[in-house]
Image 1: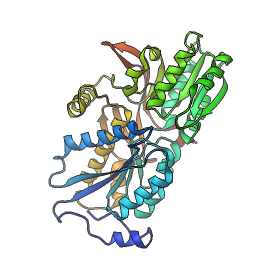
Image 2: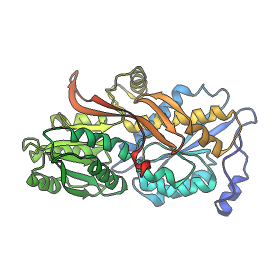
Image 3: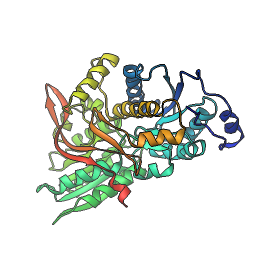
Image 4: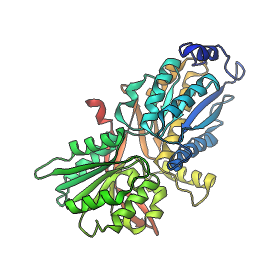
Amino acid sequence: MTSFRTLTLGTAMAAAALLPMAGSAAAKAYKIGLIASLSGPTASLGQQIERGARLYEQLHKNDLGDDTVELVVRDDTGPAPDVAKRLAQELVVRDHVDFLAGIIFTPNANAIAPIATQAKVPFVIMNAAASATTKASPYIVRVSQTIPQFTQPLAQWASKQADIKTVYTLVSDYAPGVEAEEAFTAGFKGDGKSVVQSVRVPVQSPDFIPFLQKVKDAKPDALYVFLPGGTQSTALMKAYQSLGLKEAGIRLVGSGEVTVEDELPNMGDAALGVVTGFHYSTAHDSKANADFLKAWQAAYGADSTPTFMAVGGYDGMAAIHHAIKAMKGKGDGKAAVDAMSHWSAESPRGPIAIDPETRDIVQNIYIRRVETVNGALRNVEFETFAAVKDPGKAK
């Protein structure tokens, strides 16, 4: 396989492009530059992606014959586009990676996109979910999700509920949050249905109490929430409980990050009954998910719980393996993207495929309710929207 690196990123990157790929002519050593947020308030998100990627590699390292894959992991520290861009440049020029991958936050992904384009390095997004990101580079393939993809089905479900006529929306104040607010508002339709008010909160360490007090005072039938996930979700849930919004008759609905699996034990009974729309739940009933959970707990301990971030890392490595095998040691970055653009698989989340027209994920979206199952809180799926493409691409 020909190295993906090219001469188009300035003198330093051009010099790097002249270096030979690691490994012998017969056996190839592929490097995957994985960038994720591994420190700071959102560290748990990046750790899930890295663990998911490493788990797939551990389970499938012998699938490539004599070829090998090495993960080169870097910490972008959170929503920090400048840091992410610098790390990507270093991974291409200094570490000579064959693929870029990872990324929690959309601004970071958008900062890296021009580097992938100029260096002609495939860039596999394992989380960043703003719809337009795949348009930022022809070398991007997304295996995670898009905001409209899981928000519009939830809005459609909410529209059918007789006891939800008015909704107040609360989202993180960055591109994915704005996109979620727009997607929910567009999808919540019908006689007497309306979004009565919207508010945006800081992306990092928001104090939810004053925002939720305003929601309570407005007396909507439901509160729709989008957050990045992690410990923020528990903080939101505790504020929802302490202010008594549930007792005031205000239902909580939201994106799957609001009831993310590794935070459910910290939320307690406040999360019971919360309805979300999302693409992955640990409670998903399939052999592929059961096998994934068994392997995860064997690798990381019985008390460790994978989230959608872990599944994004896991499936991202599956897509990269598919590209490596499809090219059989030949081809370039574009050939790798082409191979991944026609990839499909049975994921722990259900059947998935990449739309060759958009290089974005196609997958089932599940409406879930938090229930107690065998003594533990779970996101139990009760309605499925099958094979959902990104609605944002239709704009």
